Length: 117
Image (tube, rainbow, N blue to C red; front, side, top):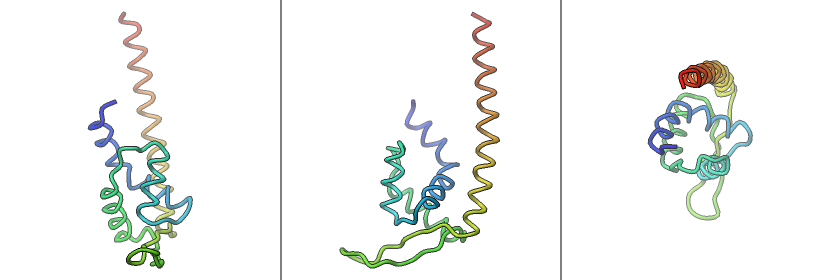
């Protein structure tokens, strides 16, 4: 699997993936990155997650609570709010629709290629 291709495909879905992660349990940026890596998204860069969190916050999909940190400034803990939950529902519907169509296309392509051999 090409790292470049994976990065390109993830760009359009990462916002939903981050929201889904926060929906499970509120978290701060580094925790979100660590959870994504645990889920197999090993190449995700922390800076990308932080940029997404800023955008998600600006779009009003999360509530942010500043929590004191043992080291340094307070951490921003993100939790999914009603608008974010609505967006996430739409994300999953869209994902389901697209993945079904892509799987059909993949199956059709494999079947066609098998017949040609």
